[in-house]
Length: 131
Image (cartoon, rainbow, N blue to C red; front, top):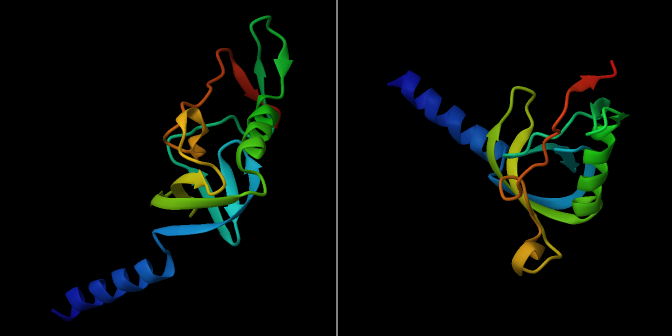
């Protein structure tokens, strides 16, 4: 009984410590990760190339696909107010979240939703980490 009560109290404390939803300006880290204040956010349903990753285009030429992915996310949400709903936590403690921009209407492709709503662009060729 006491053990069960302890688990309930712990669960309630964790729920209070990590809200299911939060809002704030986004600071982009890479193509699928950004920060809102002290909270590190990983977009749910998106797996973008890492920051230092190099991919090959259709001609076999290397390009910095990690930088391209980061720049695309900066264009979508960088510095803008973003609202996120936490779906899970990853092994690094990041809030795996579905997010939307607060400054966009809900019209067609302009809904401003990111994470789980947009189909991520996957590299078609071999990708290698620059180290």
